[in-house]
Amino acid sequence: MTRIDRVLRSNLKLRHLQMLVALDQFRHLGRAAEFLAVTQPAVSKTLAEIERMFGLPLFERSTRGTEPTAAGASVVRFARSVLAGYDRTRAEIAAEASGASGRTSVGAMVVATPVLLAQAVERLKARSTHTSVLVEEGDLTRLLPKLRLGELDLFVGRLEPGYASPDLETEALYAEPMAVVVQPGHVLARKRKPQWADLAALPCVMPPPWASLRVKLDQMFFAHDLHPPADIVESASFLTQLSFIHQRGAVAFMARSVAQHFAAQGQVAVLPLAVPIDLPPVGLITLRGQRPTPSTEQLIDCLREVAAGMRRKPRTKS
Image (cartoon, rainbow, N blue to C red; front, side, top):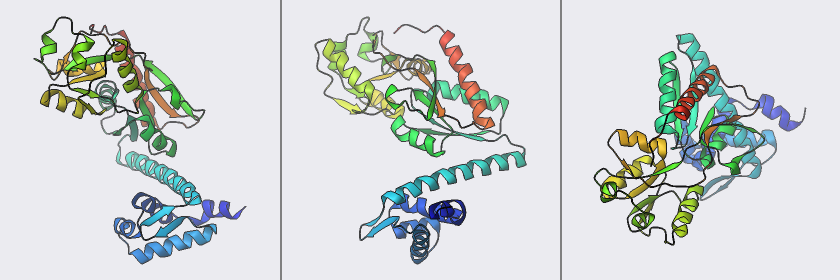
């Protein structure tokens, strides 16, 4: 057994892993010590102890704080993965001991949260009231690393082809086109045939510039010989979209099922304007070769059931 094998298998304790993750999170000995409720000298001593085990520096210290070395970043990833597995196992055992039914954590894009995921969790709760569901919203860039580290059990959102990888298992659930929305009573909501030129002249909430949807929406304006809107707010958050729709009379772009969901609640009006953009389907991503927990399997079954209903349900034309 090599030295590194021995350290990883036998010498590192949970307190070591927790301290490494805290140091990586705060990048400062004092703040990490405060978070861990220990003294700063204790953190320094423990870090020196771990570095002696590996025979390598794991963090660079400076007046600006601490930064992980290349070896340190690798050990921190290992620490996060082990701690995520520890937390999951502890939660499952505690749930069994208390008569509850476990816990699952899901990362979700906003395209899936208000309808698909909300209805799936409702079904899950109807079958297993005490199952806990942790939902973390974000995009693929933010959520896939957490899935790989074991901090999330499942991802639900658009299956962007650029993120396909041999270590990921994907399952498409349904196609989800876009819709254009405004606040009820907006001048465009009263217009029988709104045009893209109408949108270009108004404040708009657009996806962030790095999102593939943003590029495709800009191309739609160019295809109609128009410049994209100049008065914009950039966000993928529904709360931000709804806020600026109502406060500024802005136009926004939402997944069609989500737009119809909010329209049924009287929060938006869906414009009769087609958005012919080719988008990847909404689906699931899990780690290949890793068996889901029973609670995660139940949630996946519920997601499939809701998605099947969404595929069958006739949609109003936009």
